[in-house]
Image 1 (cartoon, rainbow, N blue to C red):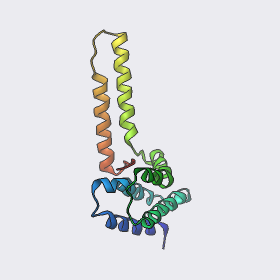
Image 2 (image 1 turned 45 degrees about the vertical axis):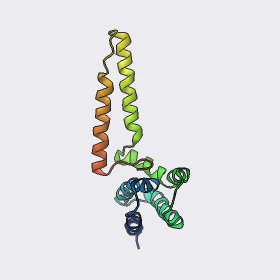
Image 3 (image 1 turned 60 degrees about the horizontal axis):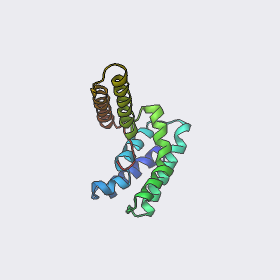
Image 4 (image 1 turned 120 degrees about the vertical axis):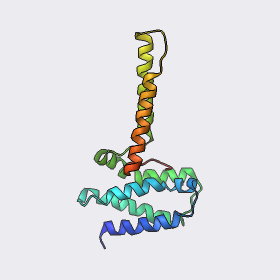
Length: 155
């Protein structure tokens, strides 16, 4: 059985086992992030992605060892960092994946521009760029979720 087929089989078992869980319980397993990461990793057939695919399979095995029961956020963070973070970073570069940090970064840039305008141009504060950058970030995030190119912890 090819590695991609094994991943697809494990993903279907993952979906089945977590289908009756609440949203917060799914978040502890990074449910939607795992689905998006696995969907995009199987597209790649080159040898560079084998290590990422193997880490994903290790993640599924570890989730099975815990019988899909994690109540501790710290353990969930460790799982994410150990098994999924490298794949997520790879997909950030290759597939232009987005995460929570993109929206925060755009908001901070908007704040900086607005503060500079306040001090350099006028004494009145107009939160124009904060709003524009924030709305642009929300739009990008919505598009990324729709395209399956969004992954973050606890999602």
